[in-house]
Length: 182
Image (cartoon, rainbow, N blue to C red; front, side, top):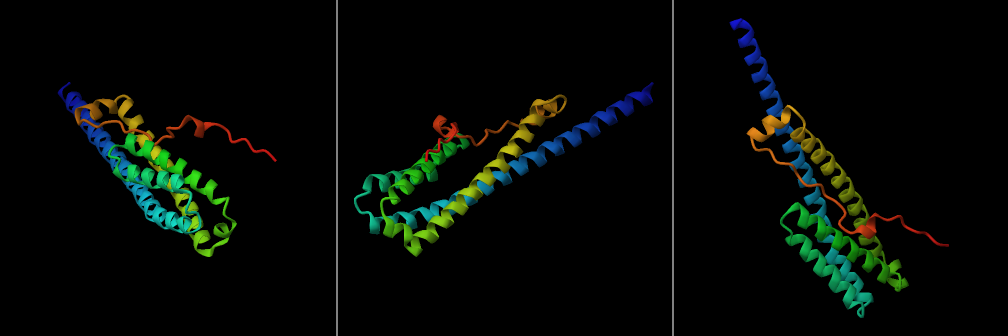
């Protein structure tokens, strides 16, 4: 009888260690994924002043669009929480779309090698940001699932593991299908 009790205690202890280590690994992967997003966003922030300055040279009267991009960039860089960063990044994406729409009115700008290079670099960065967001959200999903499922949720609550927020689209209009007209 005593032997069974000791075996049961050993099994529970081994499970607790395995569950704790699994939660720690998921937490670290989630932090790594957030770091990947930060790296790509920094790259985007570094590109934006170059694009704005290039557009300024061709389109001096587009001050409203350029100011919106600059302000959105500043807001995104100053965001503290994941929720604030997500909202600010959505605002910045919208401002950049507005800038690209304004650029359509300037054929000389659209064909300038400097601008084309910056535009391609921004497009590549946007793709990397989307990839980083997917990677982060997958890790958040895995961590949150572990935190919520029994019996790991007991270990998670004892060691105060907290659920993370997903990096989501805040603008409902961006969720709608794009209508293409010819």
